[in-house]
Amino acid sequence: MSRVSTEEQQPHGRFEPAVPSIPLAEDNAYASGIPTNGDGQQSVGALVRDASTHLSTLVRAEVELAKAEVTKEIKKALTGSIFFIIALVVLGFSAFFFFMAIAELLADVGLYRSAAYGIVWGAMFVLAALAGLLGFLKVRKLRAPQRTIDSAKDTVAALRNRGSADSEKADEEQQS
Image (tube, rainbow, N blue to C red; front, side, top):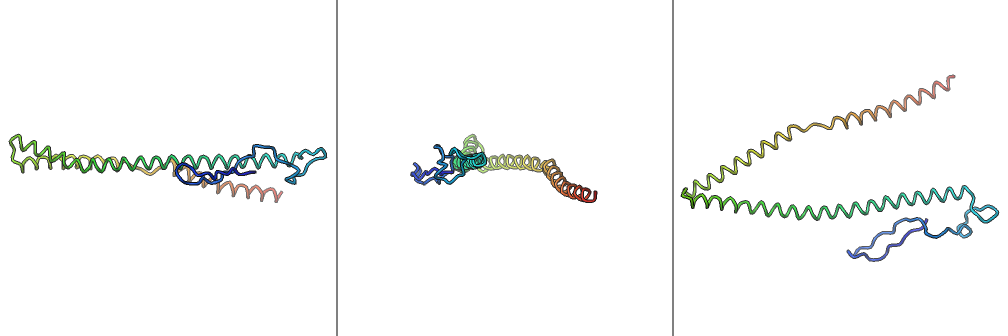
């Protein structure tokens, strides 16, 4: 098993860690001290051991690659969500000016200024109450994940019974 060195500085200024990999050249059986048969070739056991080692290294490398890619994508998603949060905050603050403009428009139509602001406040209150009611109705419908709970209980019960069934079988075989 060899390691690929990625000691080069990446564009974002950080150094990437070394990742395990399968060697691209043949292993030198004589230099590594691996037992060989009389012809200088590796024995079947050594070949199987090398294959399992390389397969294990390949799986670990794939897992590390997946972790690196997922981490990179999560960072992108977090950055994007920060911009969405900023947009929502700015929109929330600008809504104040929008409602003031509606109140001033009503005042220009001929209503008293206080009545215009009262109408806008009432409309905002009704909208907030309606949104609160809809949210309450949705939250009230939430239930525990019963299928998942049942499945977990079944798994635990099966594992417990399996252990006791195996021990009962062993006891029966010893008695025979």
